[in-house]
Amino acid sequence: MRVLGLDLGSTSIKAVELDTAFGRYDIHDYHELKIEAGADPLDVAKTLIKSLPKSPDRVAVSLKTGQTTFRNLQLPTKDRKAIQASIGFELDDDLPFPLEQSIYDYSILSQTGQTTHVHVATTMRKYVERQIADTGTIGLDPDIITSQAWAYRTLLNRIIAPSAQQQPIMLAQIGHRKTTLYIHWRGFPVFARELQWGGADISAAICKKFSIPLEQAEQAKIQHGFVLPGSQKQKATREQVEFSDAILEPISEFIRDLRQVALICKNITHTGLSALYVAGGTSLLPGFSRVLEEELSLTVKPLQALSSVNPSGVTYSEHSDATFVEAIALALCFVKTSDRSVTINFRKGSQAKHARTRELTLSALKGPMIGLGAVVTSMFVSLMIQTTSYNSELKTINTQMEKSIKSLFGQVSSSAMRTYIASPSALKNSVNKELGKQRELSKLHGPNPQSPLNFLADQSSSIPSDLVVDLTQVQVGSSPTRPYSPDEQTTATLSFLIASPQIAEKLASLETSKLSGLERSKIEEVTSPDGSTKKWKITLSGKPTEETYGK
Image (cartoon, rainbow, N blue to C red; front, side, top):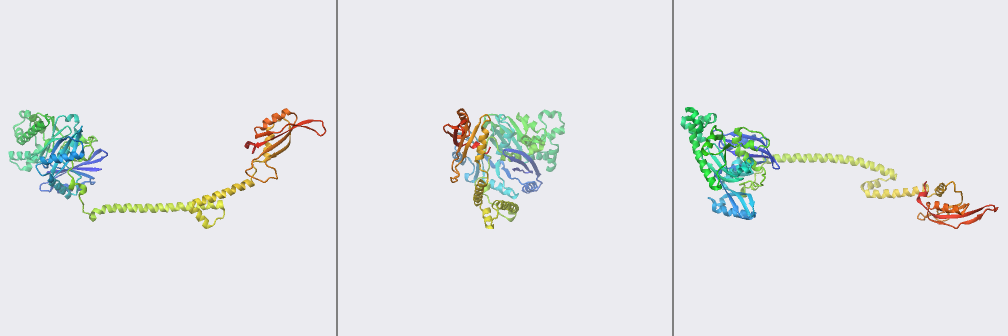
C-alpha cells in the first residue's frame, strides 16, 4: 500500500511516500516544490500531486498546533463507553469554545489496574472543514487529519528508545514564519506551542542591519549566514562579529521562548529537559546549535528524520533530514506501532471520510468501467475456450464409449446407445447382466473344475511306490442317474484290495489329507477264485478337499 504524508508549508510543499504492508514499511520517495512569490500554495500542491508516478492509496495531513489543543487524562475506568463519556464531560468545562463546535479524538496510552491514561486532542469543526476543502481542490481526500503533536509523537517514538525518554525531550520545528515547540516524555505528548517566530525574522534582521532588500538578505542568510558562539567571538574579525550579532538578535528572542517552555515543562513533569532536537532549514545555520547549547546549558541535536527511520539504512542529506520532519511523521501515522495505540484522527462524525459523498461523473466512472469491461471480456473468452475444449473431450469420450459398448453387446440400436450414454446406471446394470450370462456359458463349455479324472490322478500320485494296492472301484460325485444340482455336495468312494490289514491303516492315513469327514468300512477277507491267495478289501469314503482338483 502506498501512503503519503503531506506537509503544506508556507514556502514549500513537501511529501514523503511510504510503501507499507503488515506493519513493515519502506521510504519509496520524497518530494519538495518551492512556492514562488505570489503563487497559490494549493496550486503548487496540486502540481506536486499530479507529478507523482502513482496516486497514493492513503493520505495524511495535519492541523497546525495553533489550531489544536490536547489534554492527557487519568480516568479511573477501563470501560470504553465510560472513557468516552468521561472525556466529553472533562472537555465540556475545559474548552474555550462550545463542545458542539469542536471535534475531538482520543488514544489510550496505557492502562494500569483500573486506571486508563488517555491522550485527547481537540480542534474546532471549521478547521477540519477548511482542511478537507483545501485538499479537495488539489484532488485529495485525506484519510487522516491529525495534530502536529501526535505526528511528532509517532516520529520520536521510532527514533528515540524508551530508556532515553525518562526525562522530557523538546523538539523545535523551525519554519519560515512560525515555529512549533513540542515536549515529548515517556512516549506521549506533554506540551506543544506555536511561536510567531521563524527564519524570516533572521532575514528581516539582516535586511535592517545592512539596509539591503529582503530577497538579498534571505539569500545572504542561506548562502553565507552563520552564528558565532561567545567562545569564538574573540577569534573572529569585526565584520564577522557584526554579521553574527545581527543574526543573534532575533535568535535571542527565540532563546527566551525556549527558556519559558523549559520552565513550563519542569512544572508539568517535575524534571528538567534532557535534550533539544532542532529541525527546519534555520537549524542548519552554522553555529546555531552551538549557541543554543551555551545559552540553555542543554544538549542540542539535529533531528535526522529520514535517516533515522529508514529501514534500509540509507543516509539522507542534512537538508532533507531537517526539512521533511513533518511529512515523514505524518506518513508514519499509517504504520502500526508496537503499543497498538490508535492514531488521532479528526475525521469523525459528519466529517468522516466514509460519510462524505462523491459526485458520480462519467470521467470518474471511466476507469472502473474500462476495468470491468476488460474483466468481463476476459471471462467470456475464457468460458468460450473452456466450452470448446470440454465439448471436444466429451465427443472423443463418447466415441470411445460407443466402441466399447458395441464390442460388449454386439449390435445395439441407436436409442439404446443414447440411453446407455445418458444413464450410466442403466449401462452398469446391462453390463452386469451380460457378464452373468458369459460366466454361466463358461461353466457349461469349460472344463469341469471337479473332474473325477483329476481326483483319480491326484490319488494315484499320492500313494508311495512301495505300497502295492489294487483300486477296484472309484466313484466321485453323484450317480449318473441323479439330476444335476450345482448346490449338491461332492462325495468320493474308493475301494482297494490290499495284501495285509497293516497296509489298510497306512492307506487310511494317506487319504486323511485328501478327504474330509473320512469314513472307512470294515476290512473284509477276499479269496481269489482259484483259492490260491488271500487279500483284504477296504472302502474309504468322504468329501474331496479343494486341493485334490486341478493338479
